[in-house]
Amino acid sequence: MTKKKVENLKKIATALRKDVIDISFRANVGHIGSALSIAEIITALYFGIMSVNPKNPKWKNRDRFILSKGHAAAIQYCALAKLGFLSREQLLNFCQNESELAEHPEIHVKGVEVTTGSLGHGLSLGVGMALAGKTKGLNYRVFVLLSDGENDEGSVWEAALAAGHFKLDNLVAIIDYNKLQAFGKIEEVMNLEPLSAKWKAFGWETSEISGHDMEKVVRTLEKLPFLKGKPSLIISHSVMGKGISFMEGKLAWHYQNLKETEYKRALKELKDK
Amino acid sequence: MRYAFIKTLTKLASKNQKIFLLTGDLGYTVFEDFATAFPKRFINMGVAESNMVGVAAGLSLEGFIPFVYSIATFATMRPYEQIRNDICLQNLNVKIVGVGGGLGYGHAGPTHHSQEDIAIMRVLPNITIVCPADPFEVEVATEQAAKLKGPVYLRLGKAGEPKIHPKKPKLKLGKGIIMRDGSDVLLLATGNQVINSLLVAEVLSKKGIAAKVINLHTIKPLDKELILDSVKKIKYVVTIEEHSVIGGLGSAVAEVLASEEGNTVLKRIGIADKFSKIVGDHEHLRNHHSLTPEKIKKIVLNLIK
Image (cartoon, rainbow over all chains, first blue to last red; front, side, top):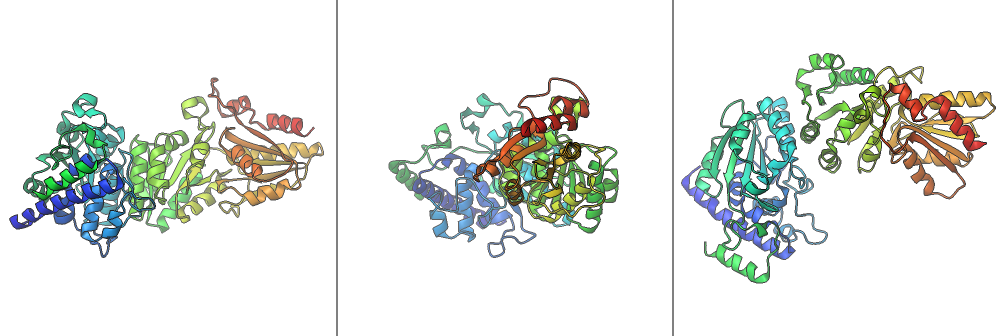
């Protein structure tokens, strides 16, 4: 990818952040911090790395994306709207009564591959889709984005074990490691370290990056698969609420909704970027 | 029943390239032929049922028809949320196959006794629940499950179930089979208790009591029409199942009867609301839970006297 394109992705990430702030404020819903911490990853995947086509959303060779940390659906919807899968009107209707867009992604929404919302499901679904790709001889890739706290779920490790065993090099898991889960710091609630070594031991080839360094994010995703015959894991070190000064690294923004003053301040900060 | 299942599935898989068999490390000496014939479509997922069901959902999203197999308790209870969110909520074409439904795993003890599976599966939207009564019914049910687009729970016995049909029956999912006609008492049974209901009806007939026996192999959707039509003429109804008296066939029938006016008297026979504290083989446990022809007969006679 050219430097110019990477620069453009940075702008898209900022635009998605603005949209997240906007639709979350309109709907008076939380999970804003969890959406903002994956802005660069989501942007790089949807606008630079994955093959997707809004005109043919079920195209058989498309890359599959599963938002296993479903509570961050707001930013996935913002990306899908920007790509043309959803209309602007649909996006602005996010979480309003009778809207088709809920706080967690659902399969009936154009561009969404699977319904998620309960943590610990997405990677198994991804393993199934990756196995199907191998069976059918299709060369699509399956990207699964997990939260750090989600690693507490045993089913994640069942799926990780299977992916390593079946040598699914068409499967990519990305962990959004923003170091905070719903009730506190990861290291205090349920320490995950050494995280990379755990996944390596399960048969994955791993890479750790700063999740907000677009250049690094893109260059890492361009190297996939890291090793033939192994699933790839990216640990994306990130900051909860990244991009909005008063949200960054603050646990409260896992759940908290925006007040009008905060909304205005957040938009101003993004406008100045 | 598991042999009838795998024989049928192997036959189906040779014609339908979409069929997969996923097992939670069970099926030793049972699945080898399938595994040899279709090595790419047989996956031992290890002892990890939650992941197995999630993976099946992923395969189904890509157009395959996965059958997932384990002991009935492990197939339904460990991965319950995956069955709910990944399979039923998305209405995916995955077939859950539970072996040893009821008390089939006798000596193995209460961890292996599947006495709540029908209840928990029954509350899930979109799912079809089938409890075949004999190997012939397993054959037809497996064929129809593969054809039906959507989630199915197939509750099998373990092995050695007697045949209740002389040949492959004309079985249609959702439609009960009248096994025997009568007008004094209505016996509604499912799965491996259909045979006992027939034996009870035979003994009752010698006492001059005519029992109508309906085989409700499909618990969801339940054949409401047939049940309501039958209770128009018969006051006494007895449900018989190798499952908790809570939430299974008896509850499903009670729900149907409660929706209509009438003077029906309903007695539900099943496993009491407790875990087995005794050790024993299948027959011994059936006897303990009043699920033998002799004990069922007594309950029926007591009801209609």
